[in-house]
Image (cartoon, rainbow, N blue to C red):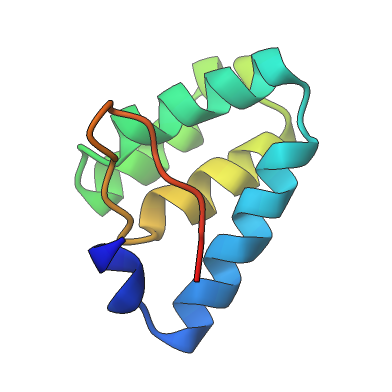
Amino acid sequence: METWEHLTPEQKQQARQIFGQMQQLPPDRRRMVSDAVRNLRTMPPEQRERVIQSEYFRSTFSSQERDLLRGASRLPLAPSENGEHAGPQD
C-alpha cells in the first residue's frame, strides 16, 4: 500500500486506532460507517463537518460512530481497487 508508506507515524497510529474501533462495530454498522466515510472523503472539509453534524447523521450514527467518521474521513488513505478502504498494514 503505497499511501500507507507516506503517512507520518502519527497518521499511522490514528489509522490503526480508527481501524480497530471500526472492527469492533457490528458488521451492518461497520458497513454503514465505511460507506459514509467513502462519501465524506469526496467533500471539502467544511462540507464534511456540516454533514457529520447534520440532523440526519445525528439520528443515523451514534456519537462514537460520528467520531470515527470524522477521524477516518480526515486520513489520507486511498480506496483500494474494489472501492473498499484498505485497513492499516505495515
